[in-house]
Length: 98
Image (cartoon, rainbow, N blue to C red; front, side, top):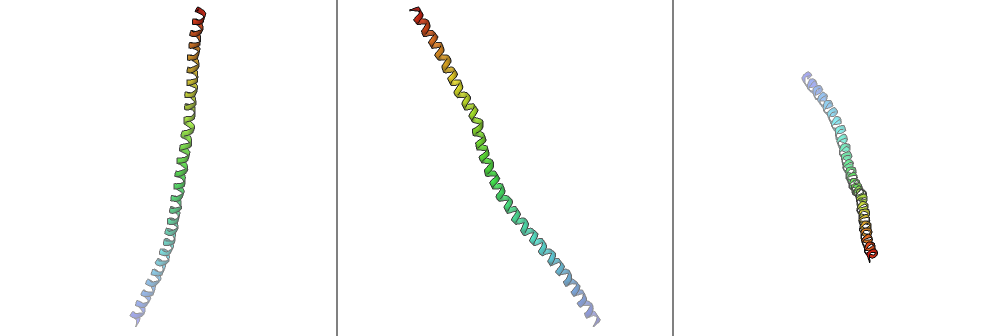
């Protein structure tokens, strides 16, 4: 009878230990679920950030190109003015000779 009580006591102790382990497992399971949800939200946020970054890059490229395009425009105007002045001087000199 005493051995049955000892075995029963051992089983009760093992059951308590298993209950404790299951509770820890459940806590870990909840933590894993929360972590999984957080990782999903992080992935979504990173996707939006990547889209915003691409939009900013596109806008920045346009802003960087604008001064170069303006410089080309003003350079063409300057060259046209110089050519016009040279041609005007030549024509003026030819008229003065005639």
